[in-house]
Length: 168
Image 1 (cartoon, rainbow, N blue to C red):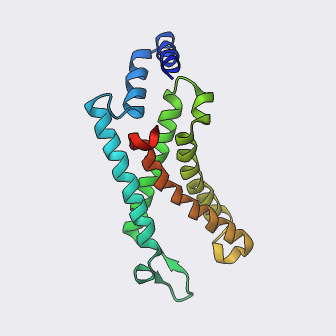
Image 2 (tube, rainbow, N blue to C red):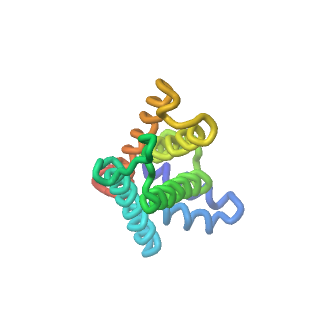
């Protein structure tokens, strides 16, 4: 693993703006690297917990309201929180992907796979909602969309990125 790290550090010496990219990459990947990396890690943990809490609140019947046709009306506050969290997760994955010294290794790393699996359902359901219609109108396809929404539970696993015990 140390030789892999040395190869990664060597990569940054060979690219344009390598020192800046290296600092940013280490900030995102290593919470112990610096005070900003600790703050970034804490912010990420907070966003994951906010997202999980929002998802749980949205599933509690007492907090759900329906229109006259029986269609679920999304709470604007939880919807805004979900959009913020989704944007954060997307920013995090895209930034890690752009800064990684080894893209092949990036896509093979379990924590990055978890990050991708937790982000992709957001955009799949968004595309279906925008272009196809609501779940209730789609029958079996609507059930598939619900499965993609349930895949957001993988966000719980995103907490592993910030736990040194779970990372090793």
